[in-house]
Image (cartoon, rainbow, N blue to C red; front, side, top):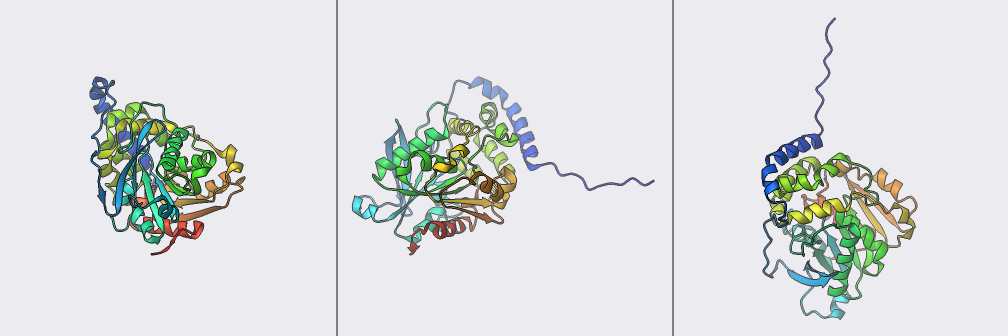
Length: 339
């Protein structure tokens, strides 16, 4: 009797990354033990103010911290001129910052560039608490706390304005909370990489949110593992940008959303929603159209769900991704006119 041999089983990508991370964590154990009291294990981002590529750096005080914004709003334009425009707010995810949406995949076809091509649109991106140039504070963080920071910053920088909020990953969770608890600053929400219920156990999410693992690895090794798990198209994006990521902010933000669940409040939503489902993200994290349909079954607000082929969790940083996202926002929310 001849022996039948099936095709070899491929080891799941997340398992390979987890094994790599575990090895790196073990290698980094002595350093971790030596520096447990030091919460500043990161290369600080530049601190000088600047204005470039039609974007300027702004700091505002909100919720007891200093919040950093990048905005296309003209300095000294006056409240009336700013109020006459549509405002888009970009809320980054864990480990990403405001500047990434200006730089990737290039400054000419980034999210900020594509949105700026729409006539009358003002674009503002925020660094979350513990990210980029916004204040790093001790934990614990929560998605609700991050939303309070963002809402306060928007009220301070743009009094009385409502925003079409785009969120990536936990930034989408922040958008979800803004639309529930801070309705005065929300015109609509859009985003990808997050679910209304994140409390379902996922090993890779749990593993990479362990403080010991993240602190022992450091941001660059952690970013390399994340790129493998999420199967992103533009390799090196997260690794490059991780040089400006405060590690303690990453640790606390990663822990903030493991028990996040607002499905019981679905009937409270009023702002229109655009839920984006890149196919690679659906495979890696479960953020699929089918799951969105189940979660939003009791929602009274308008809900549009759009699937994208060939894109990952980091779609806004991948070639062609920003244009496709902005086109979907224009169709769903009537955002701006072509410049």
